[in-house]
Image 1: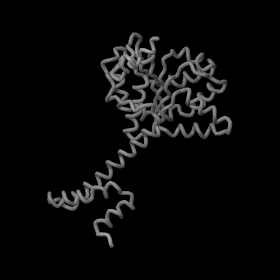
Image 2 (image 1 turned 90 degrees about the horizontal axis):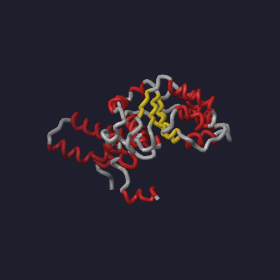
Image 3 (image 1 turned 180 degrees about the vertical axis):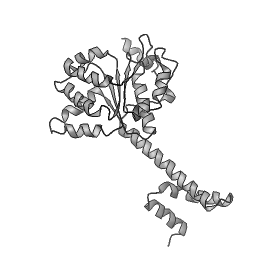
Image 4 (image 1 turned 90 degrees about the vertical axis):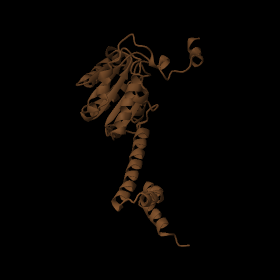
Length: 260
């Protein structure tokens, strides 16, 4: 049986990868008839539906490619919980000027004070603004770079990372280090510096980074590059643990084993 003109139009729209226009075509036609819409108004509804759907899929794709550990946003962040946090300074970062200007943000604070949440939420905001974002824990990033030494693809992998607009490196801390880790991190940061916006989170002082990474002289060069024109969010000592006391903390029964 030959398809109706309406069915043919829907098939053609899907063939043109305009699935969302095809999905609402019948409803839009009925509404246009009832509301006596003009041709331009009817077409505008179809086009806006397609644009919204494409934007949502594009955002979902960017968030997935970023590889956030969890989707943590500012919508669920308790601004009043952490007295050691300069709220206005962080809210200024949400405007993403630092991404546009390819600057570095360093977030310091003890364990559980919300460093990863802030970094991830800034990353989500960047994704929403159309930026490409990559998220790594430092240990995983260095393991990835170290593996490239075996097949001599280090430069390619670093170049791929440097194509992002924002690179987030979480948990700069005492890690299971290897001899090549500091130089690999320096290579990456040297390529990304002033070319890619970066966020680092750490619970240790910058003076301890050399000990944590295993090469103080190379680490000094890393810190020097990071601090050049860096914006610093310092969650002051005395802050509560956002992880164990915050709005999304596990219930007491779930944390009792930590005390044993």
